[in-house]
Length: 255
Image (cartoon, rainbow, N blue to C red; front, top):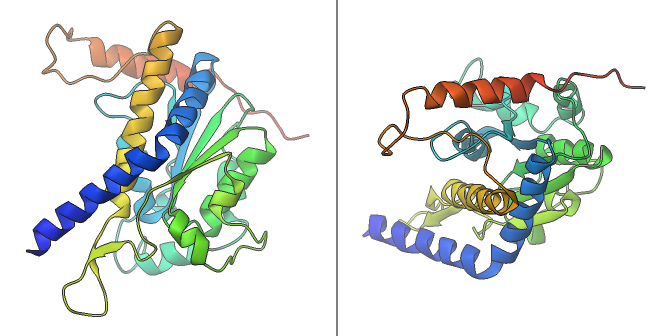
């Protein structure tokens, strides 16, 4: 019974995303395509479980050069307890000032986009990545729970939530408590935000690709070897294209 309830509820979430967020997804896809077509980068960021859509966008089958995932091993799960565990991660992602240090390794430019995933939209890490990107002139897109934003207390020193910072705030259409199924206890189970975030992420990949195709072509694309006609050296050429994309931009000292 509960498995069926979860499937029904997550299907309802996806239907709400399509019904209410499609215009924002299209606008975000157009902005992302403009960045890539202009030689820019589409940075992707998340912490905790919100790194999952970042991991899934690139590199993987069906994605293409132009996406630039920002992986911070300090804010990705490696353990539940101990080094790299939940206590450390949950503490660090709430600390003001950390994200600015992390972003110091990446040369952000106004022609880029920054996509930030965060269900709650409250933690300092996601907010400060978005604020830093905005300060450098990037188009900022977020995927978050607007229902949570409507009821949550702002805890960041700026007084902002992630949705307040973004140029395009896409609602994941998941309730604030995230978990979707009541099994007779106070705590619901079976989270919805990860499925919703990945659905939005793949929708953005599809929309961006369609816009790029209309502009003249999609960059080198990862593809399954099960696709007919794919040459044996195809993936090596994609990796080489990303290598050139990665090293084409040098770091410049801050004035």
